[in-house]
Image 1 (cartoon, helix red, strand yellow):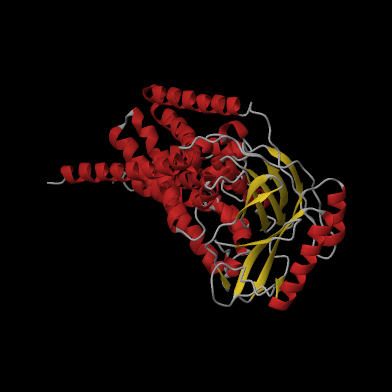
Image 2 (cartoon, rainbow, N blue to C red):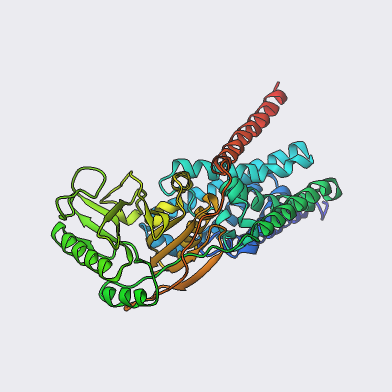
Amino acid sequence: MSATGPVTPLFANAATHSRRLLQLAAALAAGVPLYFMLGPQPVPWLAWCAPVPVLWLVLHSSRRDAAWSGALAAAVGLSSNLAYMSLLMPLAAVLAVLAFKALLWVLVLLLTRRVVLRYRSNWCVLAYPLLWVAIDTLMASLLPDGNWGSLAYSQADQLPLLQVVALAGVPGLLFLVCLAPSAMALLLAGGRRHASAAIATAALLALAWAGGAYRLQAPQMPPALAQAVWDRYAQQVAQLAGQGATVVLLPEKIATLSPDAAAALQQRFDALARRLGVWIALGVAVHDSQDGLNGTDVINNNGSGKRNLAWLFSPDGKLSSYQKHHLAPPERDFLAGSAYQLQPVAGQSMGLAICKDMHFAAFGHAYGAAGAQAMLVPAWDFGLDAWMGARMTLVRGVENGYGVVRAAREGLLTVSDAYGRIVAERASSSLPGSMLLAPMPGRTAAAPWARWLGPLFGWLCVAASASLLALLLHARLRRQP
């Protein structure tokens, strides 16, 4: 009897077990940088390299191993959102959303792997960014939360690169952010064969950076902001007016009011605005269709219920009211508005929006097309998403060429100009609250075609991704007998 015959399967099983353990360790390790990239406060520079390990891993694995290792790495990365999302929805819903996002990662990774291994050409570097931009564009159009947390927003503080959104919108910036790790992974997988793709990617990124840096040479046009909390409102607004403030912005949904209480509050704010000679914008919720002031319906649509409103009081006694369009998950019992509100404020054309409204590119485009020079945005964040909420709103300003004044409860008081430069910023605080005084924002001369080029680029990526899938399907069918 041979002594080696029965032992061979044992060695084979040990080798397979060892390979599985290495694959598991590699997937977990690949998920760690994704963890710091996919959360509500992403590390900006990681977005350019964090996907490289997981891309390299799937390119060197079988399809089955690529699927489970990619899913594991994505799950590790997406778990950084667990604490934040648990504030907004039940645990079962949180897990379902994270599982859905992990499946999107698996889909993109497997399709990218298939394209690269099938064609082994330099143009394959486009597969990963095209697929992500296509998915991001579809999410922005179809989901109730839009493309919240898009990887493009991680670059909101990288001002030279942020200027890309003034030309090609969030899809253009996301394409660049995904193109870099795609080129690095391809270079690691194929060596010199893909050197030209890496060189072209580096040249494109350098061009985008240089173009953005040049655009930032324009004179800075800062905004103005002031915020006070509810019970010390009159005192702090008077203090700000004494320091030269012309517009005072308070946060979102300071209180939920009955029609009678809303009427009394309007009278108080109206008198204060007249006495101090300032514009006052604030957020309240009203539980009925009428605000009770002179019988005026300020809701923009009929019917009773709760409405999340932004009121703007002028020094000459005029009241403008705006109703929030895009409601957050805790606002399930609120009614959504549909009208826009653009008013001349302190010599500039200013638009009113509320928090989540500014997460949607189409909403921001509407105000840009109407000629808004600045946006007044009362908001309410959740602490963990303070940076993301402020930066998503800032990106809308760069896309459309207007400044943004945003005052958030449990978040940040942020004033940014039309180039995305932070003019002033301060964390909001518990009572009696924080105040911030800054110059008024202004508008830049945005190109007339910039507003449609960004969305167009996103849908072109959707079409290109569909063509890529059709190409793969056609190649597969041709190989069948």
